[in-house]
Image (cartoon, rainbow, N blue to C red):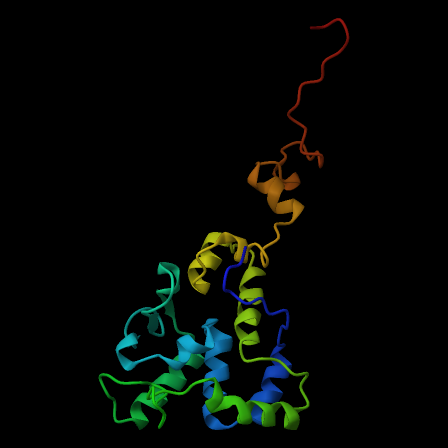
Length: 210
């Protein structure tokens, strides 16, 4: 049902990530932080270009994913303060280019790839003594964190994550009984009579009174 979307069960805690980042190289720190704060697929981040970034839209700016196998993959996301700080710093250090790869590298593609970070990632895990995880797991961590937000719904989660199927989102979102009752207008605290069953408005029918 999930198609080509891998399902990663590892959730990286904030304390774990903090220890990991202390031991990471500057490039790996930037990449891991952006993945954790945006939920991008690693290859989406690798291919980010300066043309995809705006520092004026929204509160902290926005980034756009302009390619993907489905229309859902192509999306625009707001930046967090940490992401803006990283990208703004890289922009200034690169003399504020109007175009080009954000994470350029002396490779055939011209940008970084999984292999560019493989050794640095393994070393950061060893030094930090954090339980091993894949960089892709930071996307799963982001989705899990979003799904726990009180007002998050499957459609919005799909839009943010770039999923074309609700089947993937439903792995993360599991409505509680209280939210189901609320959707039907039967949340206990909404009862004027104080009845906690949600059936306070039902008529009581006595034998012979029909």
